[in-house]
Image 1: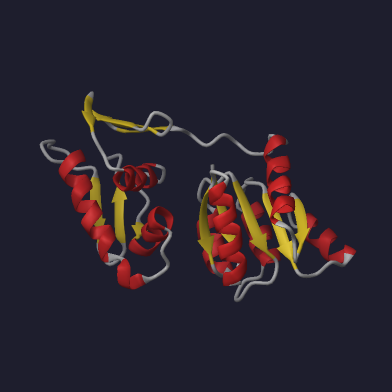
Image 2: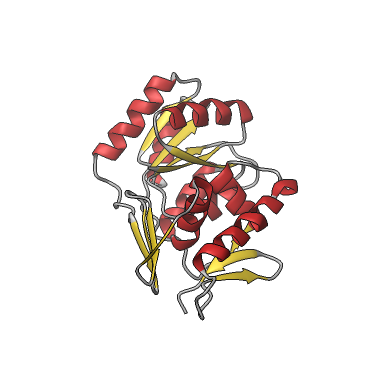
Length: 223
C-alpha cells in the first residue's frame, strides 16, 4: 500500500518512513504544504498529515483536498493537544488525529484502524495503456501480448508512469516516488532509467508511449 507522509520535521520523517517501510508499506514524503497538495492528489491509500507546515498549513491542505473531492483517509499529526484543535482538524475533513510525541505502535494501530474502516477506495493493481499491460501483484508486464522483463526499479518507474496516464511527472517527483530521494542533483538517474524502459517498452513498436515533456520530465501517453 502506498502512503503519503507530509511533515517538515526530518527526524519524524525518518522515524515514520523507516518504521512503516519495515511493515511493508511504501511511503512517499512531502516536506511542506505545497508538496502535500501536489502529492495528495495522487492515488494514495492513506495520508499522514502534520498540522504545522511551512507555507500552507495542514488544516488548509486537508480542507483543499476535500474540496477537490480527494477522499483518501487523512491522519492528522500535531504537537497541539487541545480539544478544539482536534475538533478543527476533524471538521476540515481529517479522519483521525494523533498528538506528538507518539509511539510508533500507536501510529501503526491508527493507520490499520483507518484502513479497516473501508473508508478508502481500492487502488488499481492492473494498468493498461493501449497494448501495454502491467500487473502489480504478479509483477508481469506485456506489450501486444509479448512479455517484458524489468528490474525492480524499472518496474516501479513504469508503474508510477502508468498510474498517472497523460500527466507530466517531473524528474524530482519520479526520483522521490521511485527512489525515495529528495536531491535534484540525482535526477540524472531518472533519465538513465527512462532510457532503459524505452529500450524495453517502446523499441520495435511504431507507437512510442513514453514521452519527454520539455523542461518538466516524462509522461506515458494513451494517445
